[in-house]
Length: 219
Image (cartoon, rainbow, N blue to C red; front, side):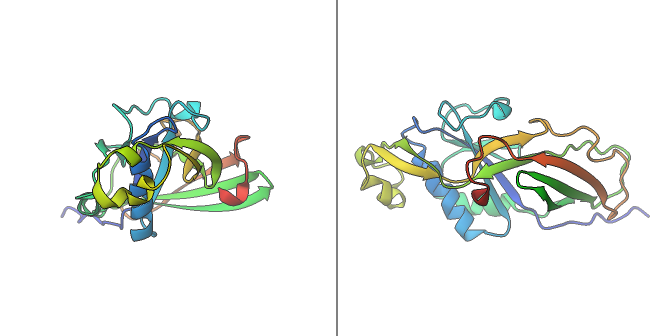
């Protein structure tokens, strides 16, 4: 008899394209903060900056047709829409046939070991997955964020806070991608091609925190 796939709770990852020069990007900031507060246990935001001091070369392969937009679990991109954001998130969070668990061991101040276990809910000899990890930082800045909302009625009251601010806002940014390792495409062979249902595989990364990380307490 064929096996019944096992499913696991999904952690949703949004990779958000943003930039300090982008006057509509505060809408992305507001949406990501709203989702983080509503779903603290199964939502990860990674702010991928373009064309400003927080841009990194490792994320240049991630294409955005415009800003603000975000990638959903590396499957599709979306613009910022508040009306159905919660409903869309719940769809994005449908159970997965795999899970990834990670733990960190501190070796020195900026040197860590990242131990990852990957488990699939089905047996296969053709698994084609690669692991990557991203170092993010909160409270980066302040840098001046362009803000079009004092002169624009877009998104209604959701953007009320930004309507009361100036057109250039000193802002401290959260979830800022400082580096993606080992590459944007992930580590080859970090997940074996042959996997047994429910049996985890292990892989360790040697982690050196990037030099652009200002405060490791905010990582």
